[in-house]
Image (tube, rainbow, N blue to C red; front, side):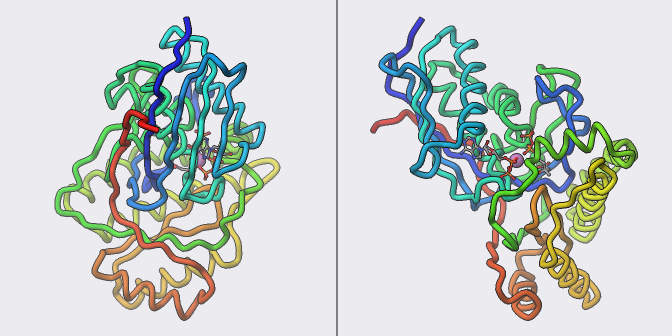
Amino acid sequence: MSRTGRGAVATAHSNIALIKYWGKRDARLAIPSTSSLSLTLDVFPTTTRVAFDDALETDTVQLDGAPMPPRAAARVSDFLDLVRERAGITTAARVVTENAVPTGAGLASSASGFAALAGAASTAAGLDLDTRELSRLARRGSGSASRSVFGGLVQWNAGTGDADSYAEPVPSGDLSLAMIVVVVNAAEKAVSSRDGMRRTVETSPFYEPWVSRSADDLAQMRRAIADADLASVCEIAESNAMGMHGTMLGARPPFSYWEPASLAVMGVVRALRDRGVVCGFTMDAGPNVKIICSPSDVATVTAALDDAVPGAERIVAGPGPGLLIREDAS
Ligand code: ADP
Ligand code: DP6
Ligand code: CO
């Protein structure tokens, strides 16, 4: 069956985990070893248009105005195959995507990218999926994308298989939180998240202890959120992230995403804490550091960064919206 139609466009924002996803139990289905919890941001959107078109022989994928590199384009086509199979079509698609987020820099472009693609492709294919189904679908493109389907605080339940591995919103209660993204280096990383976590799972003796600790971290994080206890949110997030980075040092061969400026930013956070400012940091698969603090302390944190790492760009973010899908009028 074929489908040539109007197409659809979707926007999703990147998300940063406070309790990390790092490693899969089932790579084909993207079932993670641990549940995770993140904040969808109000910065770094991806907007993606998809149109299935009988006139096309193969999928074409454009990222930020240029053809997407072959490996990344193949990953998009593999994802479109899942959508086509579900919709019962074989038509090729034209995909045009724009990342406001730097691609492959540890700022979660795969999360915003595959959440937006899941929304646009499924709608363009004539599927009408609810948010849970969209989260399950986005997960197959990139695990973290399952969480960008929802806004604000979001938990991805690891689950045991395709049906029960999806994200859902977490009530934020009275907790208000800001995230200052310190861009140490926006270049594409040498080791992708996918390859990095695979190597860690396969070779690091530090991986299993981090996984067994993770369920407790998540339970404590849920309690800290419910109590609007920002100091505990920061402490748990920082420990969980540092543990994840520790697993990479144990891999064979070992690797690390840290750069000297990442350490300088961590030092700023520790010094602020010594002065009584409630804050913490988290880091993903890249050198950039995300500082968690109260919105009322953003100016204080920014001033401290000015002194210690004057060159680094900073983006102040807060809780952002979930996936938005619309018919493509263009
Ligand atoms: P990041 O930290 O940016 O999430 P990853 O290594 O997880 O880094 O993922 C980067 C990969 O995500 C890219 O190489 C590409 O395959 C995919 N990606 C990024 N943006 C998009 C997009 N807008 N649409 C489809 N795929 C994307
Ligand atoms: C460190 O979701 O990018 O950002 O599922 O292989 O696409 P794939 O990996 P990805 O991994 C994200 C890892 C992380 C932590 C997190 O976002 O939870
Ligand atoms: Co990613």
